[in-house]
Amino acid sequence: MQIQIVSVGKVKEKYIKLGIAEFEKRLRPYCKLTMDEVSDEQAPEQLSDKELYQVKQKEGERILNKIKPNQYVVALDIQGDNWSSEQLASEMEKLSIHGRSQLSFVIGGSNGLSDDVLNRADQKLSFSKMTFPHQLMKLILMEQVYRAFKIQKNEPYHK
Image 1 (cartoon, rainbow, N blue to C red):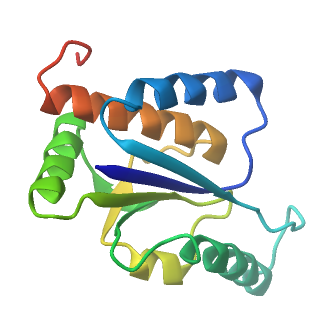
Image 2: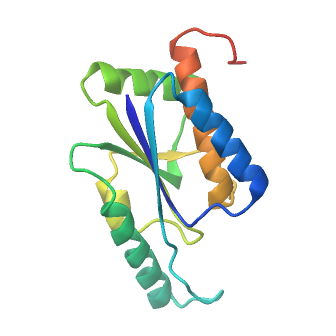
């Protein structure tokens, strides 16, 4: 399976970088992993609705430029479906069986994802109703993808 993670902004914190590197290493036997970071749009802390829309649109264009037409896209969105780790494993396995082995996970910036990105998504997935820093979300996502492969293979780790 080919897995791509497209995210907005660079990971700055060393402890998150170390965690990402660890799961990158752990995922090598299970998939071909690529990670694409697109720049976040510089904006003031307080945005008008119009400014917010423009920021999300610009980031969304950068995200969509990284996604290939044949990829199955899962957008991480607080309004998305809530899955268990077992369900993520099952859904990834179904995609692979049905020839959809190019999977792209999309993590938006601090302002969320544009409507264009959400409309392109084949699936919207929420990890929680809580808000997480988008850099930390990359690490959490990678851990869950790793866990999903371990569940699929019935290998120890999951519990």
